[in-house]
Amino acid sequence: FMLTQPHSVSESPGKTVTISCTRNSGSIATNYVHWYQQRPGSSPTIVIYDDSQRPSGVPDRFSGSFDTSSNSASLTISGLKTEDEADYYCQSYDTTNQVFGGGTKLTVL
Amino acid sequence: QLQLQESGPGLVRPSETLSLTCTVSGGSMSSNSFFWGWIRRPPGKGLEWIGSIYNSGSTYYNPSLKSRVTISVDTSNNQFSLRLSSVTAADTAVYYCAGPLWRRFDNWGQGTLVTVSS
Image (cartoon, rainbow over all chains, first blue to last red; front, top):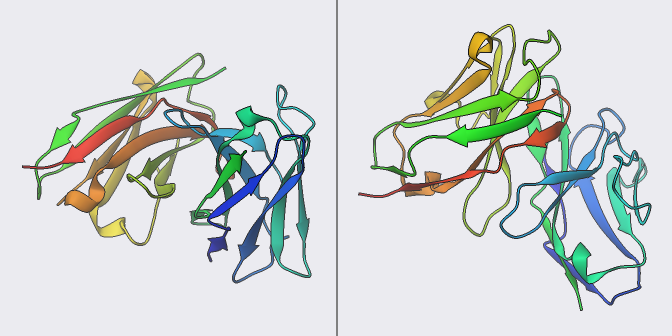
């Protein structure tokens, strides 16, 4: 299966942005979806795991969900800050494969 | 918290084999439920899963790379390794090791840039 994300999104500081991740085959609900943030020059860090769980240290401005009707998962970031500017990747799996979405470049301007 | 660190040559010639090692510290990698993976990010592109290995030695590879990839584990030395054969310029990327679960990658190494060039 594949996961499709928008190539880029942009929004102003203080606003809310949602990044989608659409699964092309099989149900989005079958396996957990996780979200990673990657800033330039740094390794990816997980910001949402198991669809909607937030690791300790990640602000509650970050939230995750999924929608079976659109077969997609979403990462929502509210109260945008300039430090949120980064690449974001969704990731899921099946019994033998790991799959990353193509990544979304978030610009906060 | 587990820490991971990649090591290996930063330059590989075309048609040769890329070899990287990941050293795990801050805990034992011997848990029966642990999986360890390699992921890469080519310049200007997104993350690509290369493959994963279970502590028992079972391996899972990206179908697009399967014919060229070998991942092995040495739990006694807290290390796991990647070998990618017959490399081309398309294999130039930052390579990351990560773990320790199958379903997600909680811990990542800092990444190492491998350039394929003569």
